[in-house]
Image 1 (cartoon, one colour):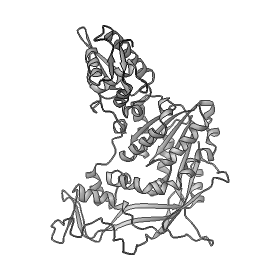
Image 2 (cartoon, rainbow, N blue to C red; image 1 turned 180 degrees about the horizontal axis):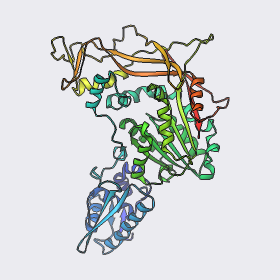
Image 3 (cartoon, rainbow, N blue to C red; image 1 turned 90 degrees about the vertical axis):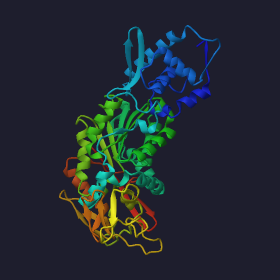
Image 4 (tube, one colour; image 1 turned 60 degrees about the vertical axis):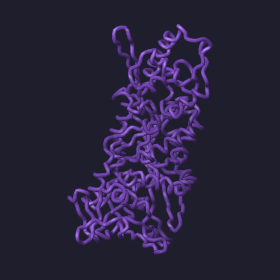
Length: 495
């Protein structure tokens, strides 16, 4: 680069967040003609000639020349662009270089391998790297389901921006007590030996509904530190794009070096964890067929996500088992909230109340989007100031504790369940008036199952899974949040 001198500060500004979203096929940490050409192609986002690519680089003022002009510009760019195409191809990157010719004029463009060119105007960031499975309910569908079914779809509770923001704020404190316990699960159960990752040098980590994902972060930290030569394919699947973006941002800040070095390959998908096979196929279309292919797998579902979807325990495990070939070593780490008992063996009632979080999504549907209408007895709409629906009880009002009922599934799982109902104060309807519910009717917003651990383990063994016994130092974990007390367990299985 005799005639070119690159301004490192301007170069880093141009790279921006792309350093963490475009992978390591082209090194964006160090300036070169190759990296400049790559950035220019992304910036232009359309078929471009060598001269147009050079002009874009000049517009960014990242290059200072010792002499005006150079006959070497085009030949050097030709080499750089050729190297870009080869690097993208060799790494199975989700981008590929497309070349077209009009007469003797060549034009170059970066396009998605399976779809069209970028629609992000060259400004690739965390949101543009998310892959979205076409399953997430539209707000219109959520509003209709709420009145039609008397409750929200399982995935809808965390999808709206209000609910996701509330959850991120709330779970920071809640997750801090259990993150080390969850994060140590892989090593606690000695899954490295069981899966043989030292021999393969690779591991696939799949996280279902990670939310903020602090337990997964701790687990990845342990893995990368203990196995310095290990390469990890990491798939995170959640119904909320906001939660996934937050998780991805945290990963980028904590694991910058292993991500740049190709040791940690992160793919986030906004998708349905009960259709994991389809989610993986979608991810492989984007980043290449070797992702999560023919390597040991550990699939995590921390927290008590399994206990928020009543009578669907086996569907979660079946989604995981069906997603991977039977020849692949496969372990699961599934969190569950446990039924606590007193010294006489009687269930202990938990002191749950109606959290504001549970009202965020229906409140958003009604008051922000106008998809639900609250009506008086004459059918006239009620304004937000007229005794509105989905408002949290006043702080000075004594909390009403949610009662527990017995829980029993056809597969033999037992425990207790807390169902969070909201009783309508007024008649509400959908915006098109096709669906209505009268005042006094109840909507089921959320469920929390507290499992009897022995029945849960017996259920898994009955389905042919090997349930691993934890060592003495890694049994269960207890924590408190105000009056609410929790006992959780991470149940490990291997196939």
